[in-house]
Image (cartoon, rainbow, N blue to C red; front, top):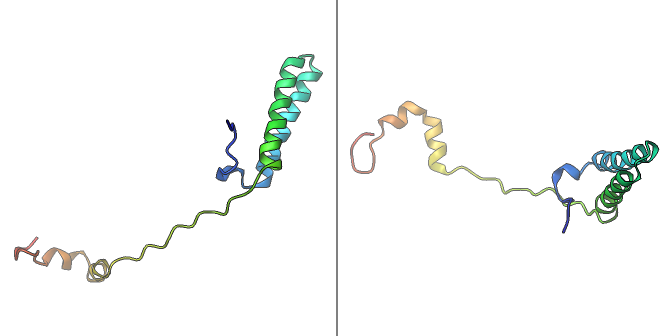
Length: 97
Protein backbone atom coordinates (compact mmCIF):
# COMPACT_ATOMS: atom_id res chain seq x y z
CA UNK A 1 0.00 0.00 0.00
CA UNK A 2 1.40 3.34 -1.06
CA UNK A 3 0.51 6.39 1.00
CA UNK A 4 2.10 8.89 -1.41
CA UNK A 5 1.44 8.74 -5.15
CA UNK A 6 4.76 9.83 -6.70
CA UNK A 7 3.12 10.19 -10.13
CA UNK A 8 0.90 13.03 -8.94
CA UNK A 9 1.72 16.29 -10.76
CA UNK A 10 2.24 18.11 -7.45
CA UNK A 11 5.46 16.16 -6.81
CA UNK A 12 7.17 17.02 -10.12
CA UNK A 13 8.92 20.06 -8.66
CA UNK A 14 11.99 19.36 -6.58
CA UNK A 15 11.30 22.08 -4.03
CA UNK A 16 7.93 20.52 -3.15
CA UNK A 17 9.51 17.15 -2.43
CA UNK A 18 12.32 18.74 -0.40
CA UNK A 19 9.82 20.79 1.62
CA UNK A 20 7.72 17.74 2.51
CA UNK A 21 10.72 15.77 3.74
CA UNK A 22 12.20 18.77 5.59
CA UNK A 23 8.94 19.54 7.38
CA UNK A 24 8.56 15.93 8.54
CA UNK A 25 12.12 15.71 9.87
CA UNK A 26 11.90 19.21 11.32
CA UNK A 27 8.76 18.29 13.22
CA UNK A 28 10.48 15.16 14.53
CA UNK A 29 13.28 17.35 15.91
CA UNK A 30 10.73 19.65 17.57
CA UNK A 31 9.04 16.68 19.23
CA UNK A 32 12.32 15.23 20.51
CA UNK A 33 13.44 18.63 21.86
CA UNK A 34 10.16 19.19 23.70
CA UNK A 35 10.44 15.76 25.30
CA UNK A 36 7.86 13.71 23.42
CA UNK A 37 9.79 10.87 21.76
CA UNK A 38 6.71 8.92 20.65
CA UNK A 39 5.53 11.69 18.30
CA UNK A 40 9.14 12.33 17.31
CA UNK A 41 9.50 8.75 16.11
CA UNK A 42 6.22 8.97 14.20
CA UNK A 43 7.20 12.24 12.49
CA UNK A 44 10.67 10.83 11.75
CA UNK A 45 9.09 7.74 10.25
CA UNK A 46 6.88 9.92 8.06
CA UNK A 47 10.00 11.82 6.97
CA UNK A 48 11.88 8.61 6.21
CA UNK A 49 8.94 7.20 4.25
CA UNK A 50 8.46 10.41 2.27
CA UNK A 51 12.20 10.52 1.51
CA UNK A 52 12.10 6.93 0.28
CA UNK A 53 9.07 7.51 -1.96
CA UNK A 54 9.84 11.04 -3.21
CA UNK A 55 13.61 10.68 -3.73
CA UNK A 56 14.85 7.12 -3.60
CA UNK A 57 12.22 5.46 -5.81
CA UNK A 58 10.97 8.59 -7.63
CA UNK A 59 10.76 8.19 -11.41
CA UNK A 60 9.14 11.28 -12.91
CA UNK A 61 6.57 10.57 -15.60
CA UNK A 62 6.59 12.81 -18.66
CA UNK A 63 3.50 15.00 -18.86
CA UNK A 64 0.74 13.33 -20.81
CA UNK A 65 0.00 15.10 -24.06
CA UNK A 66 -3.46 14.89 -25.49
CA UNK A 67 -3.93 14.79 -29.26
CA UNK A 68 -4.92 18.05 -30.86
CA UNK A 69 -8.56 17.97 -31.92
CA UNK A 70 -9.16 19.46 -35.35
CA UNK A 71 -12.58 21.05 -35.90
CA UNK A 72 -14.76 19.59 -38.63
CA UNK A 73 -15.07 21.37 -41.97
CA UNK A 74 -18.79 22.05 -41.35
CA UNK A 75 -18.05 23.72 -38.01
CA UNK A 76 -15.47 26.00 -39.66
CA UNK A 77 -17.95 27.07 -42.35
CA UNK A 78 -20.60 27.89 -39.75
CA UNK A 79 -18.14 29.98 -37.74
CA UNK A 80 -17.12 31.96 -40.84
CA UNK A 81 -20.71 32.73 -41.86
CA UNK A 82 -21.74 33.88 -38.41
CA UNK A 83 -24.75 33.01 -36.26
CA UNK A 84 -27.26 34.92 -38.44
CA UNK A 85 -26.47 32.83 -41.50
CA UNK A 86 -26.88 29.56 -39.61
CA UNK A 87 -30.35 30.56 -38.36
CA UNK A 88 -31.60 31.07 -41.93
CA UNK A 89 -30.36 27.75 -43.30
CA UNK A 90 -33.09 25.20 -43.92
CA UNK A 91 -32.74 21.90 -42.17
CA UNK A 92 -32.50 18.56 -43.97
CA UNK A 93 -36.31 18.16 -44.12
CA UNK A 94 -36.74 21.46 -45.98
CA UNK A 95 -38.04 23.60 -43.12
CA UNK A 96 -36.14 26.57 -41.67
CA UNK A 97 -34.81 26.08 -38.18
